Length: 281
Image (cartoon, rainbow, N blue to C red; front, side, top):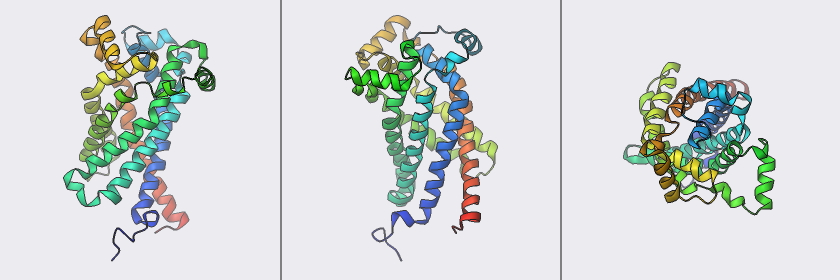
């Protein structure tokens, strides 16, 4: 019998599933984030106070559809890479390092580690998106923004709000844990969709204020967590910590449902293709 010491990680049977899941999540993220990005842009503008609180449709009409794709490239790339590393790392941990501790917090720890890498990868892309949304001088050009930051020796600002963004580790743990609990034992696509929606709603509701604080920090390089909290409280009161919450739910819940639905669909398709045409058994 093989022991952990002599099992090659790259040829372990579960490695095929991990690779398929990683590719599936990246493809699904690209599709879903691109399709729903206007709502993400509106949410960011509300968090920053660029657009006052209103209905989603009114905000879309006011901003114009073209302007609602400002920062889209940065967001899509960030989510694609971040979701890929999230699924890859968490699955590696679940299937190789914590496989004997599934009932003792092993899966939860795996999601926490994956969410940490997700946050680390996505934060600079999130900062680029926020800067492009809040400053029209860059004309929605990621390259122009990066060159400007490099010329001003402010590349480190790409990780503005990183400490606060580590709250996503908690959100990721909550979301994936609830998702796995709901979908466990089911193979219906409607269950996948609803599991994604319910798990995201719970995670967002418990951690939303950090999103507002992080957006404030990313838009202004000199803002600290304390300054951001004081500014939000002073200008909008405690309700300010839930600025854009409704839009966030509109933006996050359907995409989250579709994201996990597409991940499961694409994973099933890739599995069939690999087994039937490449001959992996």
